[in-house]
Image 1 (cartoon, rainbow, N blue to C red):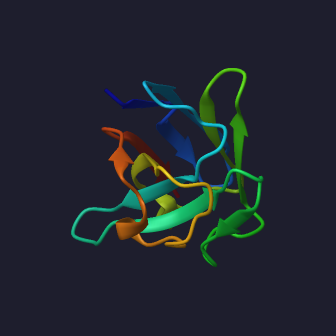
Image 2 (image 1 turned 135 degrees about the horizontal axis):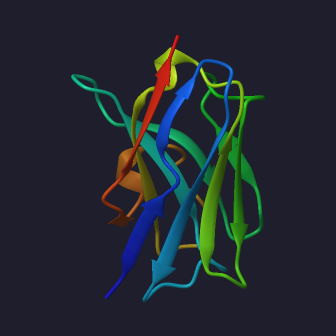
Length: 125
């Protein structure tokens, strides 16, 4: 059974940093596409970043240059380093994983098979 467990969320002021982690069990981070999504109250869940089995990354325009997605395959974990946070980054952040090597679905929600329960990020101005 695949489990994805996020951690690292919290409350920060604008301009601050957070690092989200996603611990995977029953699943191997190497060799697969993984990603981060977020959902703010009253809004659709949106793709933030993805990384495929070859380390190729993709970012939403709204986070380019501020967020960095990475994997530690030895730890079977996924990370999202978030710098220069803005109030509009406030959302529940979800770890997502797929069963194929390439992120062929881009940052679309339909491109991912497994989901974590989320971790809350709140950025105050």
